[in-house]
Length: 308
Image 1: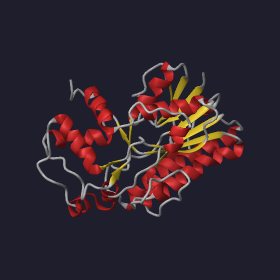
Image 2 (image 1 turned 60 degrees about the vertical axis):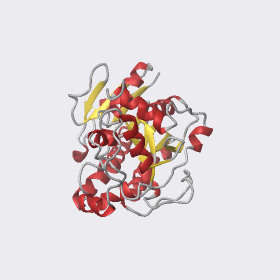
Image 3 (image 1 turned 90 degrees about the horizontal axis):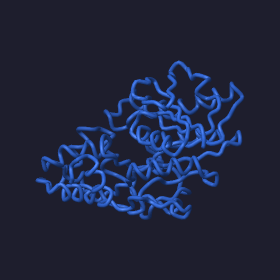
């Protein structure tokens, strides 16, 4: 079993991942700005990326580094300042870790970094994007490209590096599903724009399984699309959720103009998208617990206490 250091360990994915790793017998360390939300037996170390402060004790003896740190892209409008935060919280943090490891002259055996399907850009594609496809040209594509480039520097030191381009992670609390539930229960949730835009998604249980598998399987390396294998549209998501809650929407759709007024440039993440291929993961032998949307939503709603 390995000693695993997680950045962003108290975030959306991290708070599900580190208990799973502990249960699997791994020793888990969390690198966080605050340790108040980290329960034992996980070790927590405070860091301050803005001040380039990373404690040596957190890195020493670490065999696997899992990089999940990153500001929430949907929390508020994308002002120039917010864009800098989104970029730096992902790229500067992994660069800082590389620099600190280099200073100490030690390296982990494995680095596993999050990225996002935003790498491919928000314009629709006639066929599902595979890992070999080129990046897009919009803001999120630029962020993901730099994020991945910074993480892949570890390969120069002989470190096995795995990068997961995550779809929208569905969890029983928080995240996109958490924001959708209140209006859905009031029958106020409707498709965004035309509703025909693809919605690449993945259940949190499959995300956790992916990161654990990558930590334990030395044959995994490079880029993987971390999405469920069955592509759905935004309208399918909305109507499947509404159907499970017995709360069909009152309105046919939310106009694109209204979303652009409310969210600015960030509205493109709601109104555009492409299907993403999960073939590489499937060919690697990975088996999804929740490959289909309805099955995933039923499980998540039960966990959230919305279904018996």
